[in-house]
Length: 394
Image (cartoon, rainbow, N blue to C red; front, side, top):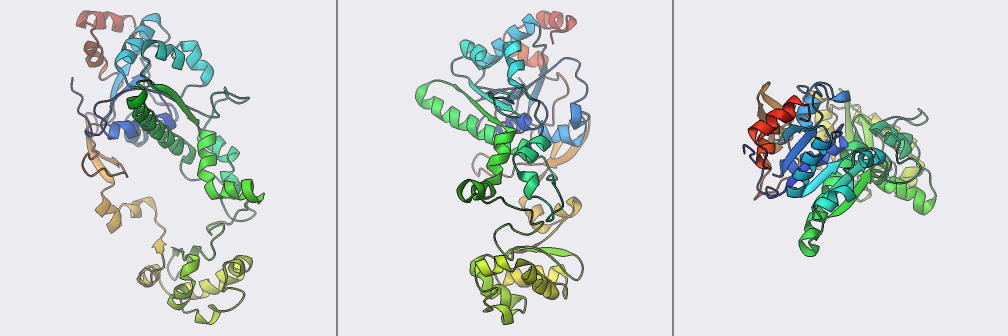
């Protein structure tokens, strides 16, 4: 076997990855990056990857590093038989089919559990495994709208705005990976696996956090406030002499913030001296602050305010992000060697385990790259594999 774990942390686990799109692959990637043997199962002949573009594109390469890849026709009886043989030796199955699809394919939790009661089976769907929307197709933007996110994003009165990245997909994937780890830990006590599931809709509502709590507890519908913080004033975005900066003074920083920006005259003003006063008079306060910030450059304010203990930072384009000295120090841009593209840079793990570090040991697999290797591992002969390939089972 050529599998080289990306870390020793999870290298004793085998994961079957049945996922497509983004949420499921994110969950599987999280496990692969910490050393699990993740076997990505795809349909024979699938040359492209849907909305993610080609296999050689940045999206596919970023999502599927550190995994092995096989092809398997799950609609055939022999393909299903091979899958269930893999299940016998696996610890985890991750899937993001619509609930009715996996039942038709006979690969749902009950089917898998019958073969391996220790299996941890993770499902990610658009709207949940049951309920009136369970069998609807779900995508990130739909969840952003239904979860309330688009109603609070963007300038006041501008209509709904989406986030610039797939936040419900990514968070659902991370939640599923967390659930897998929790279930594996519980299995150490009980000896049994279990089914866990999340959805894009639930993940998006979870991300709304205090905005959702404002409604649930106080029946307050959060409005759009653009680049300003919904409840902490005057946290927000301000024009400078040459661009913009984000300034984030918490309530306890009010006095030193006023001193740092030269606004000692309003420090004790009843309109602004309390959090409720600043919220009530937000528009006027922001105008007063911007009269000051526009006098100096962004770099001036970033240094001055941080020196004063008030959070302040730049607003970057993506090329600027990876030029920043702190980003370079953290090393989150990682290089991985691939067979077809050579050395490429992708986004590494933001989570650091000091003793069992994550690494990038392999690029995303070519379609079916490890099929023969994986089938040999579970007892198929070279001749049997050749026959399966001829009959398009693999």
